[in-house]
Amino acid sequence: MSEFKRSISLNTTIALVIGGIIGSGIFMKPALMASQLGSPILLISVWIVAGIITLFGALSNAEVAAMFPETGGQYVFFKKMYGEAFAFLYGWAAFAVFNTAGNASIAYVFSQYTNYFVELPHFSTAIEKAYTLHIPFVGNIFPLENFGVKILTIVLIVILTAVNYLSVAYGGALQRVLTALKAIAIVLLIGGILFSGKGSFHNIVSSSTSVMPQGWALIGAYMAAIAGAFWAYDGWNNITFVAGEIKDPQKNIPKSLFFGLTFCIVIYVLVNLAYIYVLPIDKMAVSPFVASDAATVTWGLIGGGIIAAMVMLSTLGAANSNVLATARVTYAMSEENRLFSWAGKPQKKYHTPGNALILNAIWTIILILSGSFDMLTDMLIFVSWFFYGMSGLGVFLLRKKMSTVPRVYKVWGYPIVPLLFVSFVFFFLCSTLYTDIVNYQNGTAPIINSLLGAIITCVGIPIYYFSKKKN
Image (cartoon, rainbow, N blue to C red; front, side, top):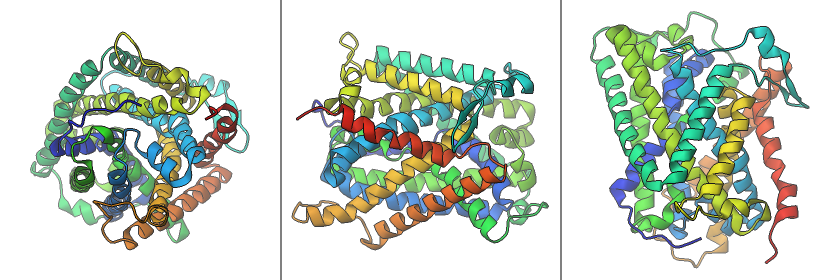
């Protein structure tokens, strides 16, 4: 990989962290999380807990990023921690599961919110269920389900891929405009709703009138809600992909992750308080467009429409950012693997990672046809957090393997902070897999999302050994 000029300042780095995190999750996941928990207090606590755990993980990764400030992010880190085979498995999972599924799910939200203005065409239930793909030990997939939403999502991915294929400058200019509109949408939501006087702060302490989960069921529900919050906080590690372009990375990477994530935690809590202020937890749980529905209560149908449009632009910005950033990992993998050699060839005329963008787009489209927003996010969160946990564990490994290497930044609270992070990730992964299997056996879930993600990831093991380049 070529060496890039270090031109990204601290302020820009913080903005990249915030911009990479705030996307579609905060506009879609709160409704599902409300239905899982039935309690506004528990809902707010989930956003705080998930934010703190994510911050612990980010600060642990920051120690490694400051040691190896190279373009490629965790792909580079895993080479240092566990060797080339594990690094490839991460790169494969990034391509096959969480990067491409992340792009698909963000764009999917844009298409879902289009239904607020125009009902997209769809097949009858009989036709949707007529064509089924069965995956052994996992479940059934219905490619024709929500077909109008899926087709619009595919069109969006194709357009954004084309924009970034033709020019990095075009993609960057589009990103700046969409980020500004995203900021406007969030300010309108929080300030406009909380100061409207059209809600009630009593909603914050009023739990659902339906039966709330108890005992182990509550733990399972809480972990499921945590997964939704993790999805909304995901994207913080994108800053490591451009570590080779950051000024004074040993200091600016840890600072940007701390300030950026702290800002996002505050914003997410305030946004959820705004939702709850005008939508009691029962109404919030069944809201298909929670951001727009909250705005409709405050400003009427026109306000709801404006916020829906802002949400669409926000998700469009997040999708555009991820389409280009995630292609860098696929591009980097070509150096050591024959399977991805084609993806490592840059577009000579436009000087972009054109082949990697095309390859990512093709697989993203396949994932879009395979399942819904919640299926995609649940699948990618399980796999991505496995690798986040391994990166946290790698901090301990590198402290022993490379004890003499200078560390400008050391994770605060070592060993407690990375240990808490790794322990929570282990518990989260086990409880998620257990809950998914139980729900599938009980017939309450059509597919075991976490197992599907794990299976796709494990396919990378034989691929690595059959396709790696000889040194």
